[in-house]
Length: 281
Image 1 (cartoon, rainbow, N blue to C red):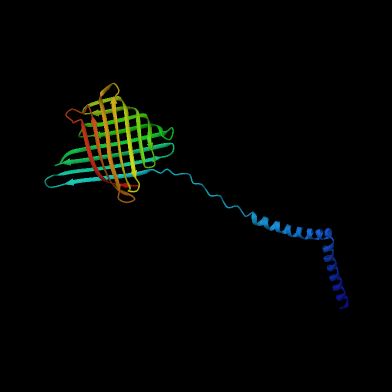
Image 2 (cartoon, helix red, strand yellow):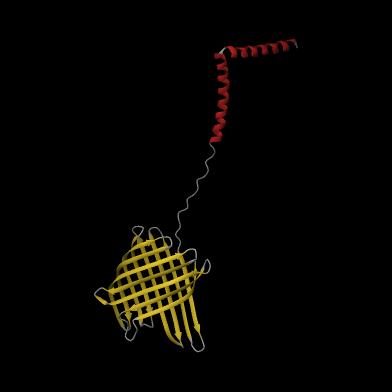
């Protein structure tokens, strides 16, 4: 016990001496504090390093932009019985796709009608156009069309040709473009087979009312034979479409087809007013 007390007294004395030295000897105190703080700081650095370098989170995968096809089918039916006996059926398909570099548009439509059992409407029309954008507004195109009109005695007309186009207006909801090019026409009109080259001057306009789910559009083209300008064709369309819900809409449009040199015994101008239901997918 005496040895323990003596050792304890000795330790207290040493600590007292160190404390007194720290108060009187600046160098000694600095050494002691330096050693102690250095040890602590070393430990702190290790902990800080562990906290400051967490495992890197996996980087988010950037999805490339998608440019889907936008398609719709249209069907209309008018039927009367009684004092009048008429039938008119129309159907159409339209699909297009737009990317920053290319535009594709394909479509087809058909109409059949009778009046008192006598056929008075018989048309089929298909077309396709590819636009290659040289800039945001300027593009080159290739267009092909096929048309049959039994009432106008046009057995077939195939039209194909290239050209250039320019967007005078190209906004989110409004577009207006003009096109100029040439076409090659091969047709059987009446009993006469013919083929010739034409110029093509066309324009197309569309405006979408986003807040109302509606749109209006119109387009027109003229194709004069290059070596016989009095032989020309004019095609035009104007229409309006109003959405009923996310997929269905009501579409009404007027088609006008003018041939300055029709088949024998036929009128030059044919017009068609169509109201139909359209389904988008």
